[in-house]
Length: 392
Image (cartoon, rainbow, N blue to C red):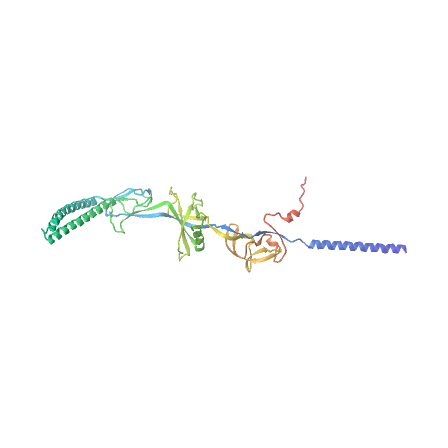
């Protein structure tokens, strides 16, 4: 009987132990299944100025391009410059035969002398007749005659002097001088050619001024308005500069300054012309070169920019994961604009103060609870991992 009772007690103890073990295992499984919320890295939306990277194909243009033309006709005797070389303003370039002009000048001077003599004779007659007329010693017709003769002599002298001045100018024009400083082109007419003052046959050469040098390029209408805004007088920021990338890929050491944005859009291309001015005293760049122009100093005043990796794509369009005040994930559709570097501008969908996920986007889905940390905060998961002991 005692043996039976002992067996029964042992059975109850075994059942109780089994129940305790089963309960412990159930609690361990529950703890194992209730995982903590995933940790994600978030950033807060802010509106800040964003610099723009604008690069265009540009062309160098002389700041002034002048056609050197003959202002008097004659035989071209001599060329006084090196073709393709530089000239200074006022430097002699061509000589047109001056002898015919000198002869015309001598004739004009003689005409002036004759006109002066006739004026003196008319003045003497005028001074003699007028007092007699006041004494009724001569007739009215005689008085009118000497007055008219005196006035005609004055006009004749002025005409002769004007002709003399024109002859003197023509003599000066036989020595053709550079109207500006710059680089010369090849001669259009060689020595011995007959030069005419007609528009089609008076061109002798061309001069282009390369210091300063213009950098001209075309930009889209939207970007032209941004550059124009940077040039506004109310804008206290320095005007945009242009860095030049040459055909060999090297960057030109000096930068140009944007000075002009056209006020009209080209109807054929839909672009706007922009011009920058570059100091070029050594003439290292010449007109007609094609280069790359990178505009610096242009920025959008207040925009929302986020890292590219924060913007996701779906069948409905682009979106960003946002963490609300309850630490839950929300699906937020967005509209994006131009990109720069590793960032992209969000034009619609985000407001200042919103928190968006930049790390851990693959671990989330709408409505789940997350543990949001800042980009500079240490990871909680990394803190919970035990440090590995160094082995000897």
